[in-house]
Image (cartoon, rainbow, N blue to C red; front, side):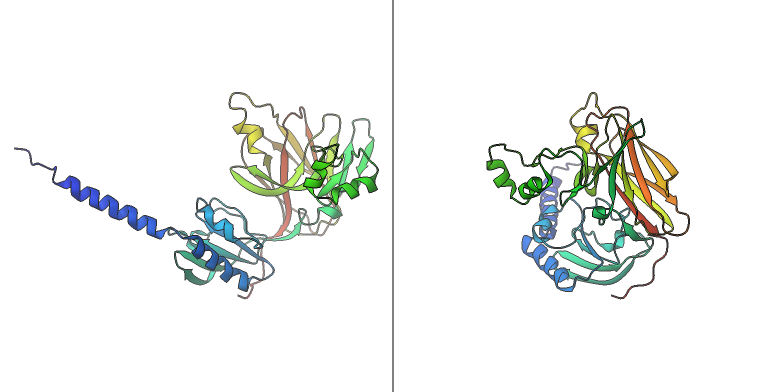
Length: 327
């Protein structure tokens, strides 16, 4: 005779309800996120970074205004080389313990259901950041016949070659709000600048994560080059790069139009490396050893087809060891 197990159904229902209630009670409220963010804001120092985990707990972002917050989907693989210290706001069991062992936990506190961890960052350190110093770089175009064109109009965000109007007219237009630009008869929020062919600071969704990077769209008739004359000396050159997700995966499920590209890296005019840029989704990483001493670095992008080539990259110079920092 088989035992009648139907009496277990009410028990299982009660257990499931209890687990659901327990899990719901662990989810931070907006007030708890705000308290945690305010605690970080009160002790923030230059060189600090801030992130949160798990990434799906995005409600906390409503409290992050004014903080140097960056996105990461996986604490175990996130790049912290730009920072001296890191604040990790965690929920649902996520905290700084998920970081690699090169980093040191300085303190742990709680703001209700949000944990607040302060970490001293170890490992490589960025000593040269082209994204931060783009206004000091040179953007040029190089045609096969050897001609070079300097793109020397600074928009406040990046370098441009193609101006419809005189530079002063363009600057006056850029000084207006976007709403004002749209109200004008021309309805041109770009103020006559080419919306694609420029090199500018940007944020792009690449590898399912928003990335702060340098937008540099290739051209069919010329190689585009960004020269970092003031690149410092360091141990390694690190470059993260990729095409925007919508161009290589999300919009064209059957056949994308993006073609592979090539990124040449030159140091003091000599090719250091030629890096293939695959026409696929992902935030790709390249790293190479640098010869000693400072020298100009240049990044030259070419491709056989420019359709949807929404390329963005982030080059930094790093040293492999860093002095200890104080909390």
